[in-house]
Length: 146
Image (cartoon, rainbow, N blue to C red):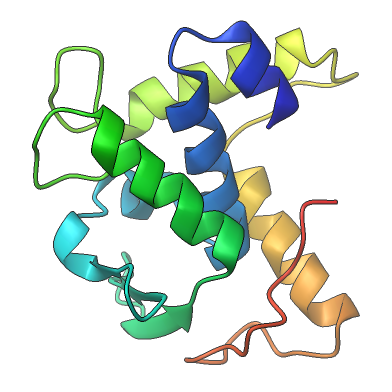
C-alpha cells in the first residue's frame, strides 16, 4: 500500500483497492464491480456480491477502510462504481491486474504479484486468527495489513 501511495498518480485509489481487496478477500472482478450502493459508511458495513456462485454476505469495515472510502468518494467524480479508471469509468479486472503488478515491481517484491494474492492473504490471515474462510459475516477482527 505504501508503494501504491508513493509511486502512483492515483495512489489513494490504488492503496484503497489493495486494502479493501485484502480485508474482504475479494476477487479482482468483485473489487472492480463494487458499487457505492454496497457500501454503508455510516454503519461501517460492506455488502459483498460474490462471483462464481458465491454467497452474498455483509462484512463489517474497520475505521481505516471507512476513512479511505470517504476520502475516495470526496475526491472522485460522481459514479456508481467505487473504483474508477482515469477516464471515470469502472476499473476493469484486467487493468487492476496490470496496476497491481506494477505496484509490486515498484515495491521491489522478489516475485511477480497478482491481485488474487490479496484473496489468499486474507484467507491465511483469517485461518491464523482461528476463523474459517467460509464465514458469511466476520467480526471486527478482520486481518490487518501490518
